[in-house]
Image (cartoon, rainbow, N blue to C red):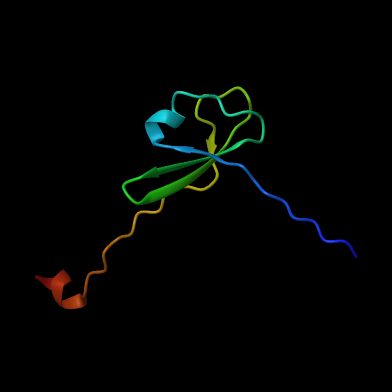
Length: 69
């Protein structure tokens, strides 16, 4: 069976740059701000595209002893 190699080209930049461009239908865009990477996909209409996943904010754990104080 023949093997195929596929290479994806992804538009990348800051979130501010993403908010100024319309990603083509199916085009992927990645933002890299403050050590945070987010992936967006375009539909050819909406400026900035749509996020592929929601942001995750880590909630610090609180021990039972700290909660009582």
